Length: 335
Image 1 (cartoon, rainbow, N blue to C red):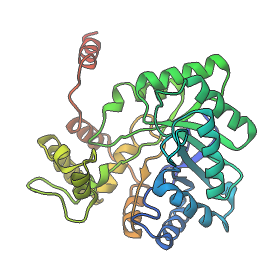
Image 2: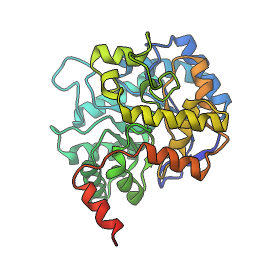
Image 3: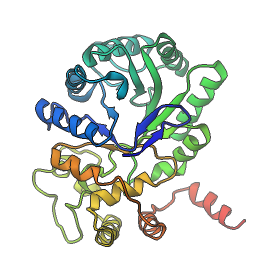
Image 4: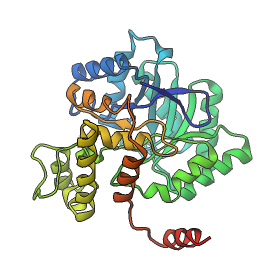
């Protein structure tokens, strides 16, 4: 597995990141340990979790696994923002909640420091200065090495970057957004902010909950039983069957299967490879439930899609541009 710098930092991370959201939920602790062992054996060093994943259980599993590992060989990322209790201050990005959150995460992870501490989503109730100054304090204290954001809009990310520059606070080193062949709206602004400001892009849901895994194809009338897509339809999650079972998705999947056949790779590997070769992307987060899924995803490394194959996948998955991006793009093409 290759390594890439995280944004403009000197931190090297593996080109795939192992997501721990399934740990303690779909995956038992024993299976989670096996997946982390297999990931590291394949050259991976980047593991992403969050305090809210299974209400701390995911962090605890990662922490127990870490105990007989060489800590400095690994890059451990976690997040803070969402509710971890019932109290009025048990959520958000206030100084109180962040400081409480980092201490709790350090305790669950059984470590002295967190490599990448990410704010899980924008908090409209807390002044941005309060959040950024607190994160800066954590870096200066040594409890956190780098900071990042997740689920920000373009203006929110740019504002955070600018405010950190103005105050000489530690800047965000990465953005963790939704990004895959079916979800490309971050390209309208967020990719440009990240490239201009030196943030690495660490995409979540690179296979969109299974839509790009090879299980789904044109002609299907319902989601595969027992899958995340079926559950998403019942729970109203964003990757639901009703949200994606449309002609655009089938066109993308048609081309994905065609390129997979040409390369001799699995559709999931092609979808991940496309993302790995997109501008600004550092390391897609693979969220797997089994060793079989992990091995399949690891097959996205060690080879490349041709320029022609990349162009085909990019063109077929190009989303319709809303205003003002349509006008801006049209105007730029006429210059």
